Length: 241
Length: 206
Image (cartoon, rainbow over all chains, first blue to last red):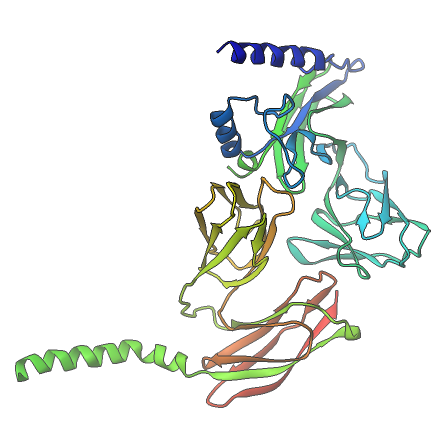
């Protein structure tokens, strides 16, 4: 009982030190609003319930509650989560850096706006013919000019939806892409804070996405002079149920 | 005896009438041919399957098993038929829990957590490809191809194929595979009283 109380106090101290509970509120420019929050990934609820029931530990694992072995998905440290605002004012055309290293892309998954470009640097010894396919539409297809070894090339993403970027020369080279019109996305690690600053007042759709966990969507109203807080947790049970 | 015999004969004849279509199905014909891939690409694990050209078709439903051992799904690729059930059996040597879920638009599911020795099951009502995962273990993923009929064959590399015992009727031959750069053309044909041979199915670049 004593140990349990000490553990809870430690958790509270950790929260306070991490600034999770008292992160500064963004101040939008006059006539504008903001959206901010924290995005986390989390293990399946049944897994957490079982772990907490057996060992009475904090579920986030950052106090050593759950030991995430190399074989496990380490949700508290999960990278490449995305917080995306579907912003009609956001035009595609942003450039995202990507490298081909051997049989892997430097980033395993990416959410971006339709019309954005990937600046692909080919560090491998092969010329790669990259192509993009749509998971849910066999006819959704886009191909690109070959990228010789040690060269760089921009490729544009003109499809929308859940996509996959592949190479004709190396089937193990693949990246999951989520593309949408007007998507303004921020790449995060689990527990990171996101901020969409200086938004015109109005209704917005917000999406939180990780390729293997799917997405959770919200509609929010942004008012002038206000900063709206929206925290979210991605987990299999939350996305599916 | 005669009083007993009459109903028995009536039941027998009724059963014969009911089962006659099924007996006809059982005496199908082989369908064979060749698969040609544009550019001669050696596509791996190509699944050739038949879809009834007419929508109604009786399908018996099977149950398939996928084991979870050494933090892997085995087999990692399974071909089943619409309406079939898959049992996920946790037969780990140690106390390791697994979860099975899929985000596939046609077959979304979350079977929860399965302890060592447990079996989780799910029925697949719609055809399509399904990628499924374990939410606990990062390298645990599997793939299911859910086909509209039980008549299929898997080719390790492109070449000759044969699908046995195909019932009479109008059929469409299709192919699906893991390489997303290519797509299959379709081929419609009729199965009658003779084997169907020399079909040529083309796989082309998108």
